[in-house]
Length: 406
Ligand code: PMP
Figure 1 (cartoon, protein in one colour):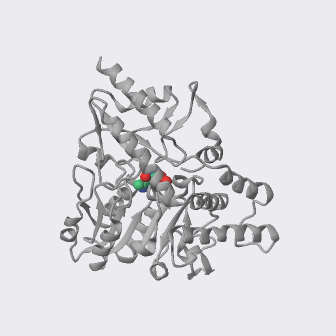
Figure 2 (cartoon, helix red, strand yellow):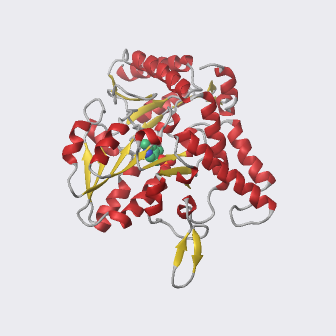
Figure 3 (cartoon, protein in one colour):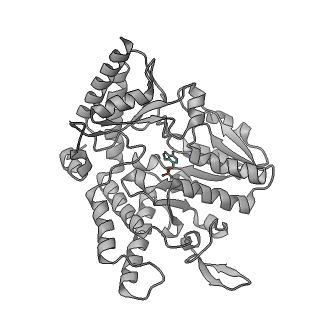
């Protein structure tokens, strides 16, 4: 990465010492650190305005509304949507997926209708559909994966029946790092008239997203995974799809008129934004996406891939270490287990050396069950990480393995 020293200065957390050692932050798949510009944008809103949006005629409200609405345009550019009318703000991927599940349930799912998800979904793309299974009697089908953690897309067509209505699939796996061929999957699903939802929670931070190229009907992501604040996320929906979709939530701001007899909903994305939205967080998200786009997603992708390759090659020399997720197409996520060492022990010992990783099932218990393990240790890389950090991590990991094997 060019100017890595300067980039790191944008993230004050990277100058901290943890347990007497410089912080090495490898927990980016859980959440990314935030650059100063994101915090500054949110501070500016809170300190110089903090007015509510849309409903005010006074200056502060108009300013806040302009800032908020401008982020729709930034998001449109970020995922190459056709129009900013296709960008809905929500609290994150989880609420995005739940809202879409509820709206689609009202619009088109009846008892016996089928929804397909993949074998590597985050719980956020499993549980909402299971709730519908309990409440409405829908059927949940699973597109399988192979031992490398790659989807067996050749089986997709056979899974689809006349009762299949929706396919909801993760673009990049948070526990395996696999990049799924979502454009191909979408094309197959569309050939059978399915609605396609893409969970881009992990994909957003590691490369470019082009919703027009993928041609998905809906796509969701969280701000905090892409250097933005928590509490904000985006639902993208094709404009013609959103026009026909019933809102999952009702309340203020999403209406045109309300009488005791009838509510007429507002037009456009606000129809799906009931209540006061996370205004500061939306503004912070705008700053985060601008920061990310200025770096260039191809540069980020290329750089993180060199970190991953360096780490993968080095950890393979550690005895008893097994990488979980060896797909050909991967982002900078390295999940692994070491024989005889519990991931939580690895995580705690790495923390002692100032290294933050995640250990556990990563909200993908079916993935853990598939590989026959309870948990992994996951190191996930960002553009602000360095090869030296990777080397130090591997050195510590080697020590940990030796300690437990003697
Ligand atoms: N899907 C994937 C692939 C994820 O990695 C995550 C977060 N770990 C989610 C969904 C849920 O995101 P959030 O908790 O921000 O709603």
